[in-house]
Image 1 (cartoon, helix red, strand yellow):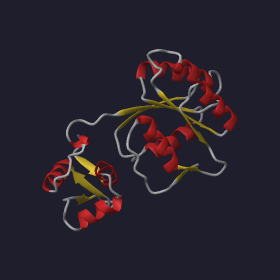
Image 2 (cartoon, rainbow, N blue to C red):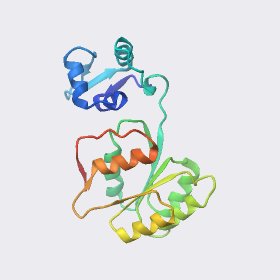
Image 3 (cartoon, one colour):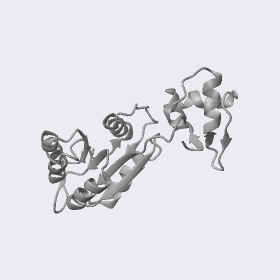
Image 4 (tube, rainbow, N blue to C red):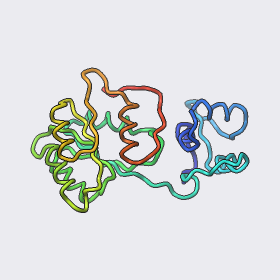
Length: 202
């Protein structure tokens, strides 16, 4: 359990909009403080108090140490990896993130890191994304790892789905919708999806 939570995290916990959280803060239902940048932060003890006073179920995140989901990002382009990290930032639950720049490194980290989800580029030098999918889905101790293919080549993505990848995101020529990306990530992790303010990933 963390000491402080962001409004987006609290909104997901109580299954309400971020505006509802802001209204609760403004009407004094939840105690809070503001950062130097003007953002609200809410203490875990104040959230527990709020839930008890209003006969709400105390969210799992506030009972014990919440689970940290492990995500492995595999792409040979550093900028692409950073863009994916931006999508994952402030997603509303705890993550452990590892990266790999090619399929060979991805195979090694899949074995050692044991991610819950691999976000995978299709075409890379050396051992490409196809080989990573084959390795994961044909190795007993890895076969439950979910795979989200992120590619600008739809035909390659479709091939990887047939090989066992779980979901596909096509890198649009202009922008990839952040909400769609986050929704698929949450779906694969089995986490309730709460729609964030729309944005895009280049």
